[in-house]
Image (cartoon, rainbow, N blue to C red; front, side):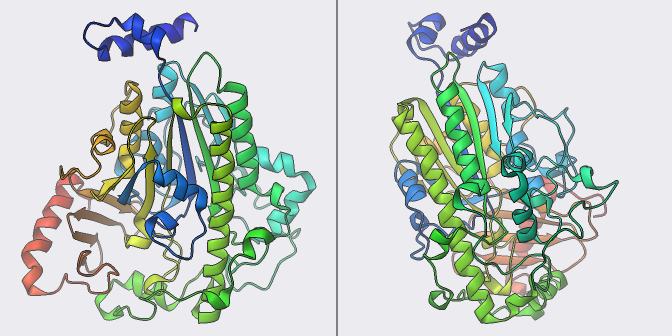
Amino acid sequence: MNRRNFLAALTAATISAAAGESAEAQIRNKRRPNVLLLMSDEHKRSCMGAYGDPVAKTPNLDRLASQSVRFENAYCTNPVCTPSRASLMTGLYSHHLEAQDNTKPYLPTHKTIAHHFDAAGYMTGLIGKMHWVDAQSHGFEYRIEFNDWFQYLGPKTKIYADELGMRNSGSGQPEIDDLWRDYDDPWKGHRDLDTREGSVAVGRVSLLEEKDHFDNFVAREAIRFLRNFGKGDRPFFLTASFLKPHDPFMPSMRFADMFSADQMKLPESWGKADKTTLPKEVQHSIDFNGPTPELRDPQEAKKRIALYYANLAQMDDCVGQVIRAVEELGLENDTIICYTSDHGEMLGELGLWQKFQFYEGSCGIPLMIRVPGRKAGVCSTPVSLVSLSSTLTDLTGVAQTAPNDGLSLAHYLRSPTSQRPAGPVFAEYGLSSKQPKYMVRDGDWKYTFWVHDIPELYNLRTDPQELHNLAAEPQYASRLNTLHRTLLAWHKPADV
């Protein structure tokens, strides 16, 4: 341990030293735990065996869930990639950041969880997708992302460009949005296009070999990191972030064969939304899904659902490879493991697809945290992904080096069934758009405030499918007004 790392560890150990034991003794006897943060993209909370889905094939995530505290009601802060990941990394809500859509980065003045762990002497690594939108390192010492995968693929990158069909920074082309702004899309005219009607194909089996998929690449490189640094003189903070089940919905054959479109069922809420009670944007999205218009056909919808589950199964397999490496290297008793996703996927609920909304399918995320030596459990308290940074630093005794909006969830990791409220959960979307909207969940109630459209109010206990918007019903006016005041006390838009 070098002097910098020793001093960082000594400072934290002094703060948390147990009675009768010196800080130096704590450092000698037990170093801080490692942290492995596993992430996926667009993982619908309910689509996992551990969350009660009989269709999903997620044995590795289910096993991790059995060893973890699993949060049944976790939410992202913003149902789209870049802003959500910015909140996760910084512990700040979107209205405190510049990153408010998938084209805007945030300034280096906002310190990330990697900065906190680096200051405490950790080896910090990011392998996979984080959708920074620019070239900042954001505190990570070791980084492997999409552009490194393209180097690995070489000429096979064209296969992936064909599968995307067009530019899609959310899937890595380009990884840094500005790279194509001056001279446009370099793949234009060089792709072999398919017959899709919109920008995102319904899906098919990928032409890439399984080993060449981004998720498999991330798994291999994460294992390399663990082998190279897992037994070093510094604890590690490693984020391994997969792309799947996000589009392209083109899994390897092995996983596509697990699911048949004919065996898929449309969501129970398919075709049941009362559009007359919904905001215009939601009505339009139900009537016309721009990225994949083909999904208006129930058979095509079932095909997409099958391919989504196949993507999910492939991602789960990759997660399993990384967790097995932790165990094979003898690191499981020294490593906190967390799994989550940046947002969900509507997957046909209410007739909606992708994310962008505050309905459970889109804004709800899986979250589970395994702490060595702690009992597993299930926590039903609604919580926010903005709290993940505070939670992981709290569990490891790492000091926060910047302002943070999150609250540590460590209490629920000790007592999952605790009735202590975590406070309202908030989310926001489209702050810089013409149609910003905000959400608060408090207890059983969820309220969505559309700045330029009608509000939504749902009781998730009696209406888990969110089919009955109660906002216009007089008997719920008091509840709606209370939630509206709660929301504006959290953040009041400039034009309200």
